[in-house]
Length: 279
Image 1 (tube, rainbow, N blue to C red):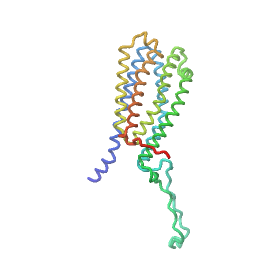
Image 2 (image 1 turned 120 degrees about the vertical axis):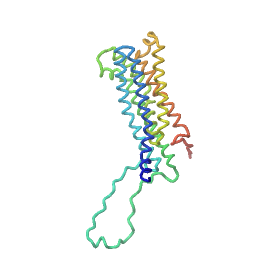
Image 3 (image 1 turned 90 degrees about the horizontal axis):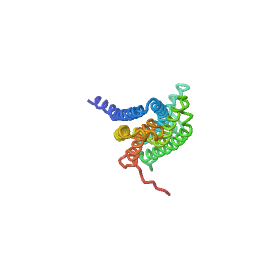
Image 4 (image 1 turned 60 degrees about the vertical axis):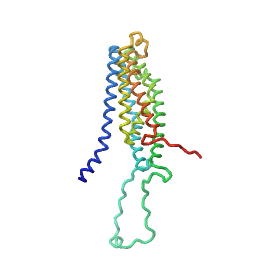
């Protein structure tokens, strides 16, 4: 019975994390619906949407480095570990030079034990340290993603020309890339918040946020399909491809940002905000 209880205790975090599979389903549903909207505009819109999707995936993989860092650092901080200290290898004990040296009593002061990774000062709780780490990661994520967004916006025509030589597709893709550049800073924050939620084991809140956002994105796409007239779509930047990104993916990431930031600012968050004292 004790062994079975220990096994259940080990499996429980994996089961809790499994709820994040809802996130993958919601994101794939939003992209599938957005792709169907872009297809209404024909081959040019579909090609432009696919080019933008490839850049979005590249951006997500690059900016996801903050999510990976947040998962590890927040978890370590909540456990009372030192997020600034590298793991130390176990030092090998030197072999004694002779049996006499082994049997001889030690003289002089006893050796000082190596520094341990007690990481949280007595004046700061693990939750406070985790919050400070989370705040700094969000700041870094926003700065890096903003710089990347500027590079993406001003280089959108050059990026589109890498994928195609068709000037019509290039212009349509460049308009869609401009929309992607506008939402990229918010995407960077969302990725960092994802990592913070995972490090704090706040899986249910993360799954709930992306489920609601995915449902709203799919609803927005079908609403655009039903009500957007041809003249209005023609005047929209990027046509159907741009509309797919604005009504679908921008809604998905925008509502994820709103929902996850609201959770982060809430005191129900595992790493809640605290009142800072200034000297």
